[in-house]
Image 1 (cartoon, one colour):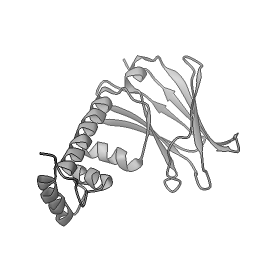
Image 2 (cartoon, rainbow, N blue to C red):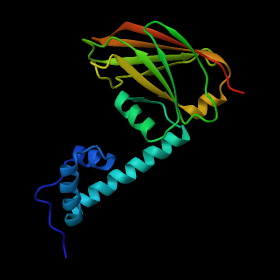
Image 3 (cartoon, rainbow, N blue to C red):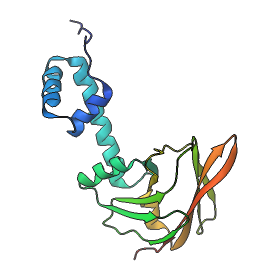
Image 4 (cartoon, helix red, strand yellow):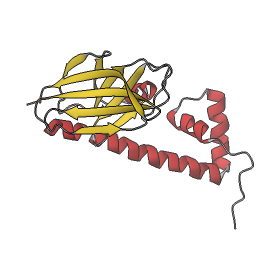
Length: 189
């Protein structure tokens, strides 16, 4: 027997909010009932569950280098992820380290983003002196902050060094420096 298509599918965003427990009780109950009766939406929810487990595993292993939203970082903290975070002011510097207890290492860069349409990050560590460019990074202009989660596994292996991140607005293929951030990393142990 072939399953019929759902006549009123639950939207992807609503399924994510449902899975994260962020919906009001009446909406949660409505989706509960729908999922029980609808194989198509239940399968979509199953895919979200598998994806969230895979993302959680990657985060727990520390093998990531990614831009996060402040809200997602708050969600991870509420979920019990042990986050070591450093706030760096515009054109500022901060002393930092990482320990074996940390599950996520985050740099929070204060940056004015009004009017910026494309943002790139240029990253250079003194221990390898290679510049990496991260193009077209996601940002919320109203947040005035970029949250960068660094590859924790790699950071634990690096010696003490200086890490400089420059954020540039890309306008007509030309870079305009918005801010520079210096992380003075002390190797742990």
